Length: 410
Ligand SMILES: [Zn+2]
Image (cartoon, protein in one colour):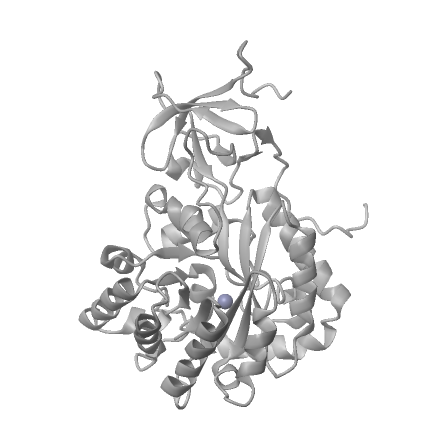
């Protein structure tokens, strides 16, 4: 037993005293085996923080850990797309498995319990990474829930000759999601209408990379909102990026967000990749951040989440599989009060992925992170965010590390 392990009472319960929760309460967290037994108000001050195990709703496990091999390409989104396309000659099953496995090991150490990964699906045939990540999802069951979203160009999945077969393939897979990259496509409305028809036919949720750029004329999100309302798909359509909303006049953006809330469209912001790729030009300091208007979206009633997006690939050569790190970076990049946005990396993405919300309450599984600080600013101050991981009442903490597993000894 580690010296700071929770003390065990004669009735077998363990108590963690002085635990501050995201809602501001300070409680004594009493554990009974694998469950939270009780959460009475603490007598003393907050000594540590607790939050549900995090969930990342937007990753790219097929691309991860290619940064060193692929290089960066030209600055900006389309340079990253080209660099990744060139790297794909290396994407054997073993290569994908090794890279994604390294990512998942890091995610597990960080305390993650669920992820949605997009998987590039660029032509009519099923991509190799789809099957590899499907096999890994089965292998990781019980540790991390892995959900796959097919990331198709809209011109492909919206093609009446090709889209239907892809939707059938996706629908055959357990827990899979249909998705598209949407940016100022020709005949955008018609193509999106076909995607929604496929989603309805196969009862598939949708997840879009939409308007990932700073052109105010990129308005794909408006069509997605309209079609979500028309198909009654509230809570099943998630929009990632929506960077162009950040440069549209405030009243226009507010009107879009109000309609998104009404239709039940969710928003996933990706602060690290957006600040890296948007407004990027050689020899010039970026002026714009490209982060979707998070505060305004939440105020309008939109469910807002945060994701890591790309980690160690041409789209973002840095990053970590740690939603606390994403929250930390969002705090400065988007001026968030981290304690008020814990739900964006825990309960909200959990619900959108169809998992239990993971709320900390008596009777719930004792699955949580414990941070050794009395407040969120102190907890997230340093990039190596210290935490203890509890799963089913057992502490599973291990030091976070970025070590390559094949590193030779000195
Ligand atoms: Zn993405």
